[in-house]
Image (tube, rainbow, N blue to C red; front, side):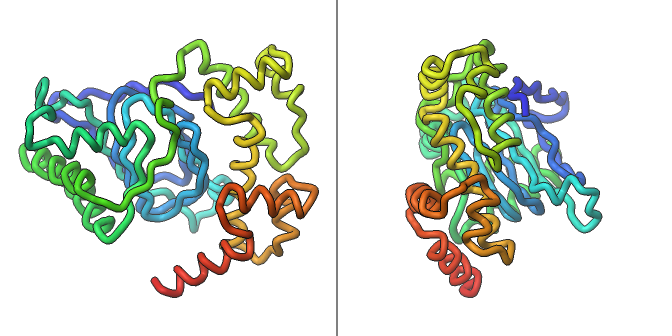
Amino acid sequence: MQPKLEKVPLHLTSSIYVKREITPYMDYPWHYHPEYEIIFVEKSYGIRLMGNHIGNFSDGDLMFIGSNLPHVWKNDNDFYQDNKDLMVDVYVIQFCENALGEGFFDLPEFIHIKKLFNHSQQGLVVKGDNHGEIAALIKKVYHTTGIERLVQFLKTVDAIANNTEYELLSSIGYANSITNIDTERINKIMSFLMENYRQDIDMDEIAALVNLNQSSFCRYFKSKTHKTCSQFLNEIRIAHACKLLINSNMSISEICYETGYNNISHFNRQFKLITSLTASGYAKKYLKNANLI
């Protein structure tokens, strides 16, 4: 999961880059790019990393991502087992702020869109009653060309900017805070944590991956992610625990041990600290919302 600078293809016939990807699984590396990105996940589920945020995603995930904010979607293991019943269907729009001309979005009519651009530096998840309307607009951008594509694109950005129900994910200031020198170190750490979160993890072992002693590593990691390594690891574990609570028949005790905890009391404390709910309360809330829908 090596974060890298993504080079977005240039198209002589369009000011914005639009694509739809239908694949067996998501295989993007952790990456960033100077373009803003709108992404709508028609079908897929797994874990999402956005800056220093960790959380789950599923069908309908709709995001506006700021310039140079590192991000990745990683599917659950089921997608990598050659399961013919699972597939990924994703719409993506990428564009530079000056795609429609230098200073275009500085016009007074676009004050709300400039505010959206600022918020997107944390990664913005679109929610609420307008979610379906915005998803439909994104599809129209993909299915049109020429001037009509630009019209639908502006309608899409306007709808997202006017939407009042959203969630900001990453810490303020995370975008543009990772240098090329940091990239290799941070990717080694994140890759190790994602692959080994079910095991007991020794901080000395992680520090050794990036040729630091434990105290230097802890200071370095927090300076770059705004979190301690232990916090980051617990968020990975609890994100998977949340998914197991709503998508499996495992008991809370079984989920505790499956996600790398060897003490149910510690698991319960971390779960409530991160989600503000108990594990049983989280499951009940999800089931209640599902029944309402």
